[in-house]
Image 1 (tube, rainbow over the protein chains, first blue to last red):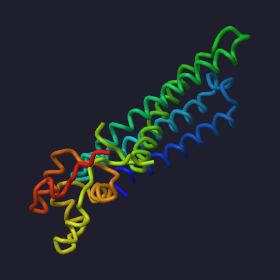
Image 2 (cartoon, rainbow over the protein chains, first blue to last red; image 1 turned 180 degrees about the horizontal axis):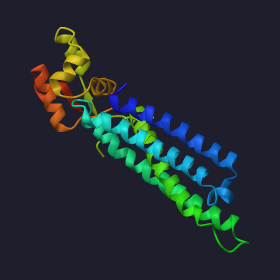
Image 3 (cartoon, chains in turn yellow, red; image 1 turned 90 degrees about the vertical axis):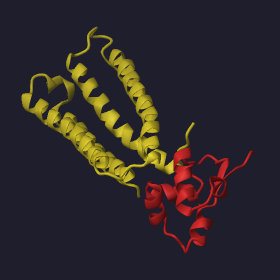
Length: 145
Length: 72
């Protein structure tokens, strides 16, 4: 397994664990209704999503810092992974844009906390989809096209 | 569903001809990772012109002796 591939796998596993943890915290702590009032709830979520991003950055950073870890193929895979990242971000935003007005149609307004949640979710999607893109690149192979 | 490469190579054969040169050794000489050599041998990757020249140089042969362009 190439160093970048290994890091992408670790990063993906860590990211999925953190994401599951965030979802569990949301369910246990009462969802969006209590999010703005409960400070402890917000701190737990902040620690989890920032932790997920730091873990992802750390793992990618280690690969880039060590000399001889990446060659032209690895770099090409990284570039191609950005396409998957872009698609994942577009789909995530589309999911928010479609679901929120549908759910809060009768209220006529969407809770402010969703701005924060959208931002957090997009950052997580970026980190996860980058790892997925890298792993797909190694699995399918890449070419200069 | 790997793309069929139009450019074939004889890296495996040339390694054998060079006293069973290891993939690691070739990778070190060519300045790439062993995984890239594996991908090249499996036809899963077509290298840049620079890496192709470095591989040919590692074997002490011309580019055409390592890589062949095949039109489908």
